[in-house]
Length: 637
Image (cartoon, rainbow, N blue to C red; front, top):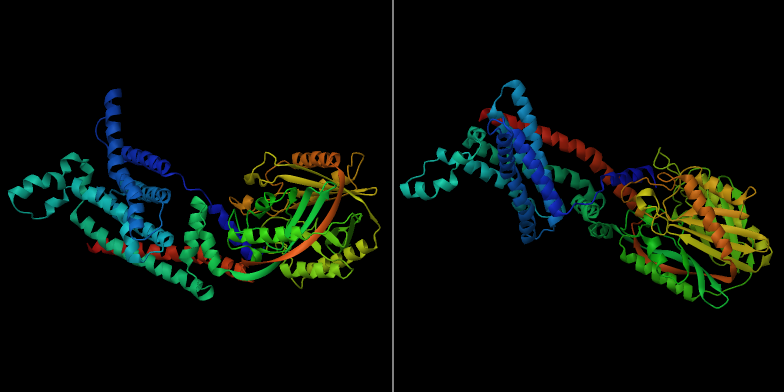
């Protein structure tokens, strides 16, 4: 990926899973109770039983005046939002209500501290409460508009529930109705006991005046206008550059990170472009005709994150075949991300079609390794086809662009090869550090190194003697998790034996490797008195399952490298013990899929990064402006 795309990938630090609605509400009530204990002082706390009683009363008042609006908002927002055509779920609604409560408690705590040290009094605290309730409304309005894609007027209805509920409780229990002239003994007898109940509220609420509610209405209108201006300014470059709204991206991103929905795929599908990608399959069959192993390599990128698009392609393809499946990384970057998981089925169907056309051969060459510049190429010929594995280790490298891979494959075929399965080993990088992240682009020196190495490998394999093939396989899903950089496929090993030479192909279900780790593993497998094979290469699938929580989560960063090496050595020994005669064959099909498209990933990353950087600054500027206007209104009032 490029440096711009790495900044976008860094958004994964915001990824979380929304807690269940009852977890959010339970925490909200706990926060409300603690806020009540801190805010209200119901009486003398001397004596154990008396103290417990008053603490309980304070906690209840906090739950009533702070927690009840949160509960009402948690349950009411989803219903109202769905009624007006929105998409808020109960989990999101509860989390949003909890966030609003935290804003209120934060404002009140800060105002109380300022009041103690400045002597501004209780009125200042309730002035801050007005700003807090208006801020909650503005925050909820922004989220509801982003998630439900409603207009500002429609979104204002569910967004106002928490603020209106709080205001209603304060209006009744502060006795504000006393400021109105309402007539008649019947009205006083039947309505006043329910609409004016200051005798049942903490005495601190008596500082609330009618002007607070007038200021709240004015402040909410100002803040809503601020939200509208903010969204229009941020959304304009998205509509001009990509033809989509930033709200679609925010909604999809929130849905994916909070609840794992497919809304982000719907957004990507709007950006997608049609493309034709080769899908190459290398299959190994036993003497009885059953499949022992299969390499599947479509020229796509398994991204962008998690299970979005093709992010979980390695696991999907592994469940499809009869033999042990090896899905290494192809020479393709983020422009070749599949826009939806549905596109994976198209690729898998093409792989099945290629598998049905395979013609097997028993003539295989020993493996050969060549080098040109920084590029190293390990190749082995199966009949008229070849498996090539490219690496730049120990130099750092990330994705190889599609055009470079096509050119390298074409160069290899000039020596008489028919189909070429060209793997990007993706096995040495320094993460997301620096401006140059190792992206191999057309026209770069590294691209020509790779193309030249592919040509040299084709020539070497064409001149190599041929013999019969034996193959052994082994795999271990391991106990490591995606959080530790290892995906569900774990580690897989295929060991080929031709003549006196044994070659081990090690595939780790992860996204690139820590610098130097690949070299230590290869050295342990091929040198020294305990060497088990003659040639070895370590590859990763580039699965983006491991990037659900962190943008940078390479193999070896979170696990013990020595334990990983020992696991691989054990699996290589198991594969050698599993060796048996096989025949091999390869075929390629072309699949028409919808991908992100040329330069669309870079454009999306640039726009998203602008939202994060400039959008944050714009939001702060608007907040400060709104606060300044609020203070002016308060002073005038």
